[in-house]
Length: 435
Image 1 (cartoon, rainbow, N blue to C red):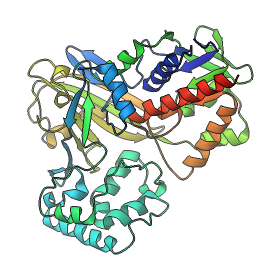
Image 2 (image 1 turned 180 degrees about the horizontal axis):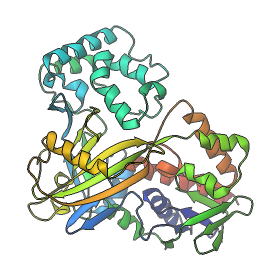
Image 3 (image 1 turned 135 degrees about the vertical axis):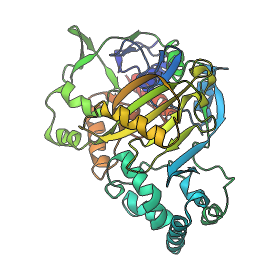
């Protein structure tokens, strides 16, 4: 076992994955978590037989290593699903993706989308302006943009697509061919579009079963240890209770905007870069109900302003073991800008919208669970790339590796987090071998 003072801050999926990989490289490390349990947002809560995740967490794979690792961890407790995703707009449910299923729209709206699509197809679909709005209009035309992609993404990200870059896309939005989209204006598409055309999810225990399985194979995890300071000069981490830990290498999965409060004064350029980071937050309302509402859908997107949430998912369609027998459960997600507060009035607004959209109908709510996720998605505005690069370079010079969705400040899937964790572990291992 290679011994060095390697500390990992945060025992979410990223921190656990990094520790797991380091341990298998023969590297000793210590992992500190502020909560009383591991998992971070990759946790589940069991309330009277209802198992709720912290909002929706599904596994998607296009990398063999990541799939084999998760399969080795979960074994038979992993089920594959063919996606059943929908969009609710104009008072009806439309199969996802919107752009490939225009046949379901009201005739006038469908014709608007088709005419915009045909006009857009006359230009280069690879030109891609330097903002997300330009990308949308060039690939799909103004009709599809106006009727779905602009309102949904504005609602989700909380800023205009015009103020965002395209560097986050990387397959997150399906781009069918022109012929596929035209065919989808006549009848339901049989093609499977997007990175999430199929997904995997644990049969039992919710998404926490993944975190717990990783943790069971990791040494030196300390829960209930909140980081209260990072002394860059002394290479020292301060923990709650006045404890201090020296480090040679520090791996932080703490959300990047939290770092200045921990380090104190920073160089002006770096402090300015931190001030330019933006994000959105998510209010997550989980509900346990007395029936299995909608036995066919996995999740639904909601682009319209009058509906508060941008997405609803059905836990009971991921696994029958997540609810008591004959009961159902679902999650709603409401996006809001950083710094804004969402009060409990949102609960009644969300419930009203669930009934108006036909999701709850006459179902009785047995239990509710609320999560306010401060850091949900890093926002890729026009300051993002330079600010992030400046910060990560500065931290790396101090022997600090900032990793994970919030540590490296990127829109990462769980597979991406695991692959980044392996890369970070290899980099640390390489540094140790050079010493």
